[in-house]
Amino acid sequence: MSIGHTLLGLLESGPRHGYDLKRAFDEKFGHDRPLHYGQVYSTMSRLLKHGLVEVDGIEAGGGPERKRYAITEAGITDVERWLATPEKPEPYLQSALYTKVVLALLTHRDAADILDTQRSEHLRSMRILTERKRKGDLADQLICDHALFHLEADLRWLELTAARLDKLRAAVTA
Image 1: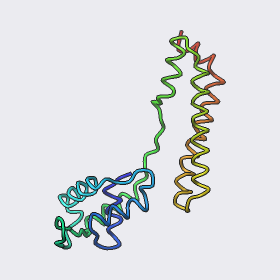
Image 2 (image 1 turned 135 degrees about the horizontal axis):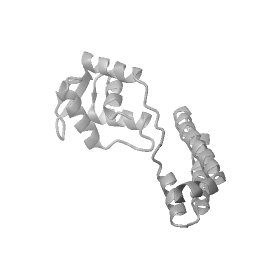
Image 3 (image 1 turned 180 degrees about the vertical axis):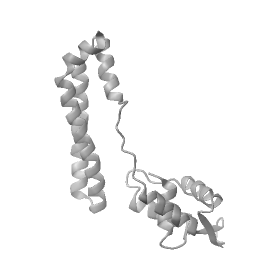
Image 4 (image 1 turned 30 degrees about the vertical axis):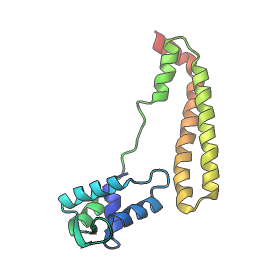
């Protein structure tokens, strides 16, 4: 996820302070990974430097001055371009799990045990996500569905690989 683009998109509804941006980000997108304040302010500095935001006002308070940021026309154009650009699908062509299976075969260890252990871990994660989805709001349900679909695909791969272990052993040890 592009933090910069997300913060720009949040600014389209109106100017905000860094604290307000962090709170909005965490509420909408940061369920599992809330932003650190340092990330917000370093990102805002970079966006300011590139002309995608401007300082809309500065307020003095009990602590440091609070800058209020507003998105510029260039920022709006940048968000529009980002939203219109499809995300590159991640094909996982260099999987750590595949590497473990091949190394197990090369070193005469039980690759089926590795696949079984991974299957158990995937199923455990799926149970946790399913429970979270059941209790969550619509946004959380959609996020959990995305993760669950990926885990289901991984499980299919685990089953297919387990069924082909003899052929894979022959191929990698030849």
